[in-house]
Amino acid sequence: MTDIPLDTMVRTAAPARRDIGLKARYAAERRFRIYGALAISVGLAFLAIMLITIVSKGYTAFWQTTVSLPINFDEKVIDPSNKRATDPEVLIKANYPKLADRALMAKLGIDPSNKPMALKLKGFLSEGARVQLRDIVVADPSVIGTTRNVDILVAANLDSAFKGQIDLNVEEARRKVSDQQVAWMNQLKADGTMAEHFNKGLFSYGASSRPETSGMGVAIIGSFYMMVIVLLLALPIGVAASIYLEEFAKKNRFTDLIEVNINNLAAVPSIVFGLLGLAVFINFLGMPRSAAFVGGLVLTLMTLPTIIIATR
Image 1 (cartoon, helix red, strand yellow):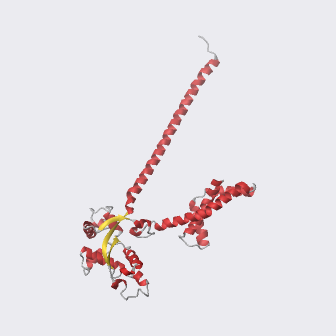
Image 2 (cartoon, one colour):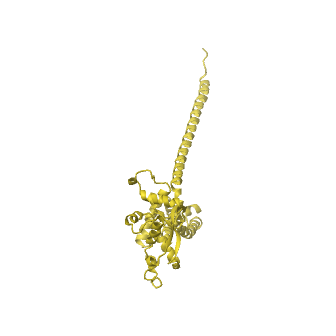
Image 3 (cartoon, rainbow, N blue to C red):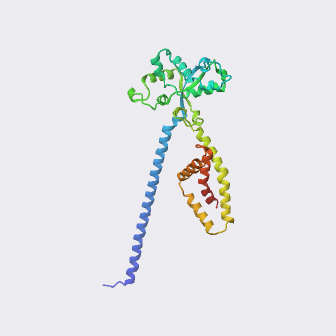
């Protein structure tokens, strides 16, 4: 047999080993890309499910159920002693729910002397009816003694039932609205008195324990004020600090310590800044709770490190 030189065997074996290694590396890279694509796809799928769930369950908040009732602003109920000229508080403390209940009973044909039916009617209208009617009278006291149509909010349970969010086919004991309330709801719906309208209060009402009278108005205004405070404080201070550190500050241990702490503060979770604001601004300095100024100061401290780093 012919002997094959050793160097020839090495030269022929080395490319084969390299080809096998490259193929394995390329295969691993393809698998890694597939795994990455699958992970991204799963994440996007869960995000889509979450967004679809939020929209499908929350879009009804933009609509609100009301009952259009002819409200008789009876002076005997609002100001029986005729003291509103000297005591404006009378208009605020009046029994406005009584006016709404009277109008609703008249609309449904219920005798006010029928106490059992009157008790069943309690909870049909929202407790926010008091505020609705009070605001009308306070804004224009001349309505006293007149009758005007007012869209009164219904209670949250009736609102949900009207929107189809409560299954009315289950037995009465297992749902939050009674059969009598459902019958009244259908009666008012049939004559067009009860209907859905765009929920303007969602953007004007504040926080409330009653779902039908809660909204984002206070949160929107507070967020706007906080952003203004942050822009007025964090932006100029952050830009000025970054320019000073970059252009004028001497390089020594002290400035190095400042830079390290700025980088560390940028990585601190926001909850820590919130606790700092609670401890310092509210508990120690005695600033008011739920104030936009306090929130703006906390956000200023939280965003300053990021602004300084980004500006540099």
